[in-house]
Length: 80
Image 1 (cartoon, rainbow, N blue to C red):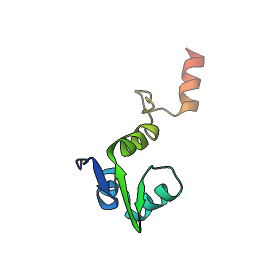
Image 2 (image 1 turned 90 degrees about the horizontal axis):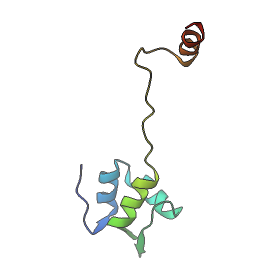
Image 3 (image 1 turned 120 degrees about the vertical axis):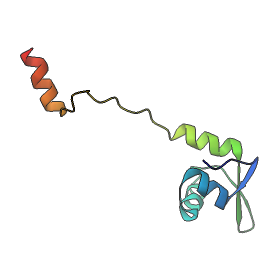
Image 4 (image 1 turned 90 degrees about the vertical axis):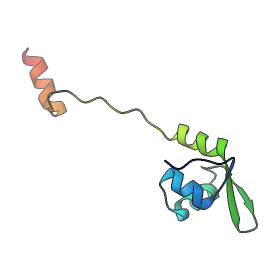
């Protein structure tokens, strides 16, 4: 994973988040990723990137160990 600097360019931020530069700019324009716009250049502080990652991270759903669909698993549990 790319290391974060204290202040990151749009290129560094895109590489870290594994997004395109266009998508990072869109996130910044829509205020979903906090950034600083200086003229035409966006920069992103490390805490803003970390906050974005934290807010957009979900926990993995643990599947059933038998590989059954939800409906099949319900049928098995009902018949037991």
